Length: 327
Image 1 (cartoon, one colour):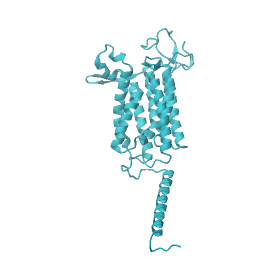
Image 2 (cartoon, helix red, strand yellow):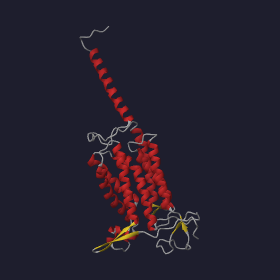
Image 3 (tube, rainbow, N blue to C red):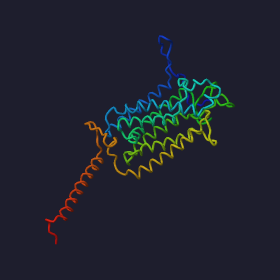
């Protein structure tokens, strides 16, 4: 039974553009993914430029990240749904990405490889870029979840909560045995809210503690992995299982563990302020680069230490010189 506060699934899922050879269908899901990418690039560019990077350098890295992210998303989906592609199906459907089938964890793995390549070419520290990317990535993933709503897919288990999601009874993914009018957990909405809250948390934490040297990205991994492990566990769409647990839940656990390891290791290795988002020798000097006050203090302290060290060295030389008398 549909309740007054239930969430309806959209009737609109895209539009068609006539072209000389037919029509091109623009899906709402694709628009959500594209909007998320744009927001992530804009947010990351502003954050990285403020930390001293050359304006626009994010685009050079993003080209690699987006391309390999799409490939990784498709490969991960195919490998975690082998029956859909290797059980008597045409082999070319593995490459039919226009028919749907991408995975966020695959995009993260492929995107990370792309970022690594882009950072190597531009001289940006990989973890510095990851820190700048962290909140923007959560915003992008939040927007991308709207695409699942437009597609009427990846919803959760049945629920009696008033904000349950309405799904049409003839949906191909409708769980067998459930009565028409059953409401489902709107996992797209849960994850959307969780991701936006995580982005806000990272920004707030950065104002209070040092989240450079990969620590902001570590918080991202912990936050996203923890939330995704729960949202994934209440979904009803088919998925590969390992030891009775969905593969994506295991991937979420791995993300949390990796985040904790990065956080602990980097807290011990780097207690000071990150001097630049560039690796040594590849720095960009420009008038638009901003330097935080604590970085100025750090540089001043280093200069003072150098002067003091030089004075001490001169004193030792003078003390051992034959021309100086001692008493």
